[in-house]
Amino acid sequence: MRSLGISLEPDGFTYALVEGTAKKHTLKLVGGGSFAPLDPEPTRALGRALSAGLKKVGKVDRSALTLPSGGTVLREISLPFSDRDKVEQVLKFEIESDLYHVDVEDVVCDFIELVDERATTNLLVSAVPKEHVGSALEVADQGGVDPSMVDLDLGSLFTALRSLPRGGEEGMEAYLHIGALRTLLLVTDADGLRAARSIRLGWKELARGLEPENAGPPAAEDLDDSEELENAAEGEEATEREESHDGEEAHEEDEEKPSGPLFGADPSLVAGPGLDETLERVSSENRNAFLTRMTNEVRRGMAVVAGLEVNALYLLGARIPGMEEAFSVRMGLDAAPLDLGIADESGGIPDPLAYGAALRGLGCDGSPMDFRREEFRFTQGLERIQSPLTYALVGLLAFCLADMAIHVRQARVLARDLWSLENPRSLLSRAAAKVERLNEALPPDPPSEWVISSSYVGTEIQPESRIGNLRSRVGRAADALDKLVGEGGIPMPQSCLEAWRLFSTVMEQEMSGYPGRWMLESLDLTSMDAKTTGRNPIPAHVKVVFGISVHGADLAPTAQLEAIQSAFKVQPWVVGEVSLQAPIGPADVENARYAMIEVLVSTEKGREAGL
Image (cartoon, rainbow, N blue to C red):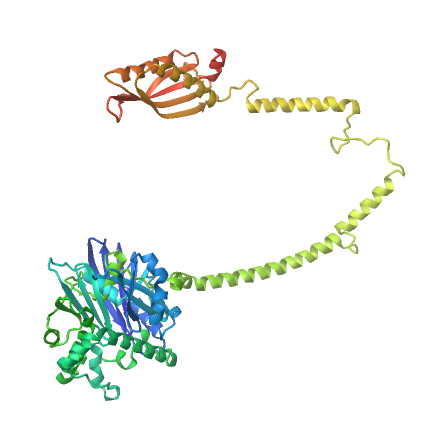
């Protein structure tokens, strides 16, 4: 199976193509592309870029999309059950109170179960705006892709990390994926996902200081120890307030600028320079300030796992000089860059988000989330045939109108030719004239007897011959019916019910005195016509094929089977040979023998013998 994973971003996309199964697969191709994110129609622009970038991919069996978590609301809830079907029934009711700034009907919710030691089930719920899902599916349609599932970047990253080999050490590990606009934080252990956070801070924040007119607020200064402890205790609440505030700002921006960047991205950042150019132009002071802010945000996100031991921090995504040292000092953990350790046939390194989406297509273990549901489940299929279906309906309507006009004209002509009394050649006029002539030719009084004619040439049947003629016709019909049903001397197939009676009588006589057990394994009765080919013609008969097993000790079963075969041979109503369809042999049970015997039964000879 070939699975294509696509990670969409407000300024471009990446993809990964894998081939194989969930247990064994290889990476075949990686790539990506970008477009002008401030295009008046960003959806169409990204769709065209996607179509151009996927030309080398070829045919795929399944595809999956990954959406950025910008504008997504993340909440943790606890439920007393973990069955996915039951959770989906109550999920929107449970999360509605947390979506105070968003209508619950405007988002698509899904969840992933978090591993912890509590008795209740802890769930990380993601509420993705339907507008983002619709835009992603529209981009995929423009790019010629029909994704079977849509996941969030957090879920795809978790799926990619689950494919990495894990040693036997205990404890938890933290993974940080630094993207252009968002940073993803996952905390996992051998049992699964412990915590997940989406931080609204990416490497493009470094580009704010490069253009004075787009300069953002000053970078946050390093916190002292008392502030660190306070932020660690209130980290989760602060993150939730920030995400809620982000969602409100994105909602307001969408109302004011409906044609802005995709997925609610910040226009001042999305069109900035690339990573390499940014790192070349940014000053060391700004870079250090950015790393300080980033480490503070990650430390605040790690507050959700306070009290639990995290062994190491692995960094993925953008590589910024001094990043490992900053995280190691600030977090008190060993921070090291992480590579997935795989490459395609040309040596290309995959984006972890696109690679995780491709693994979802193969059914690999990881995130179970899928946001292509409800009204998005069949939207793409309908949009694909929308134009041809519209043309077909318009053509059908035009044909019906033209056909109706033709039929109306034909009806008028027929009405004039049939029912117009003014037209002397119309059917009504000619029929009226014939009726008038017939009335003139009839005598004034009706005749004493009506003449019964068998044809229009005037052949008459006398009254005294009518019964005899009817009797002869009925007789001919009866003879024809007898020939049809076999009473005219033509042998018919024999009765299977009568053959069953004769067969069961012999079996009852032979097996009534047998001390052991026996079983009729199969019985097939087929009515056969007479056979005239060969030296010994066989009359019409019923072919009885039955399988029987006899249980007993020593040679008694074999002897009993031979006795059954001999009993059928001496019957007067048996025609042909009593043959073995399968030789006598051992059955599946110990001390048992099995045989399949064919007997040809003539019920006509049975009636002649008085049986």
